[in-house]
Amino acid sequence: MIVLIVAAVALAVALALAWRRLPGRLAGAVLRIGMIIGCQAVAILAAGIALNRAFLFYDSWDELLGHHRAGAQVAIADAGQLVPPNGSQGQISILTVRGKVSGATEQVLVWLPPQYRVAAATKTRFPVMMVLPGQPGTPAGIFKTLSLGSNAMQAISSGQVKPFIAVIPPLSIAQPRDTECTDIPRGPQADSWLATDVKEAVIRHFRVTSEHWSTIGWSTGAFCASKMLLRHPTSFVAAVSIGGYFSAEEDRSTGNLFNRSRVLRNQNSPLWLIKHTLSYPVHLLIITSKGDRESWNGVHYADAKKAIAASSGIPGVSTIVLPSGGHNFGTYAPTVGPALGWLGKNAGL
Image (tube, rainbow, N blue to C red; front, side, top):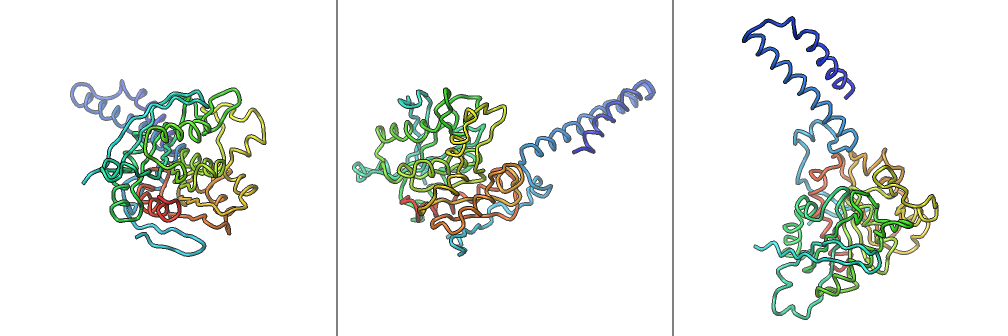
């Protein structure tokens, strides 16, 4: 990155100094255009590498070039045992949720399996999986990038899960602010929005059970998914964290989340909750990659590596640890199918 940044500046300066010395007419024009394009290419490459360094989309040049093992089988580690993973795409409904507790009004996507419309199921109440996108991210985006419809139908058709409903709410109710799914003092009540308002609205409008709710999330949504389970164990029975971290970030995009209250910070830290409050079995699947510094190690002081260590010996905590791959959907999309199978076994899905 440093070499490219220096090269981008040096080439631009060299071009300016050499401009008048270049030959005239056609040969000079072609040479000038070629040098301008070269300067732009180096500058764009430097910017791309700088962005990747900041956001860690790709872990290596091989992964950037598509040489990582997409679609490779993954294994879930549970209590020290490795378990190998064993149309219509449904219908999307849009539900406007007016939160009585949070005060927020947002549109929520609700995916209904084909079985929901079958006449024989008019009295059936379906289990629910809440799907949480990253930040920034949208419900429609997470549905597409995780191939949620096809993954869900494959899991249902294979008998890994029962027919279920997927609820995909927007993660932030105060865009562009990143609320980290927190009830912020004198601010947005994002925790109450997800745990109470969205759930109550879906129960009112669809034939769903109030007991068998699980949650699965990506990146910031993964942090929120694990937090929903640990903070609201009577509302959610299981959670899957895909590429998530385990303590809230605070930066310019979040502002002051906890009003400098360590108690409030701890109550919103999945890692702290695992260490200090988890005295009961919990159904939590942690999916991470050793090449993902946003999740595994190095960027966040409460990362997946620490969460896995802290939850060692707690019944019901499972892991998928990929050997490589950065913080991107190419790395984690192949884990969605096994995650659904895990929810089928552990969440009544």
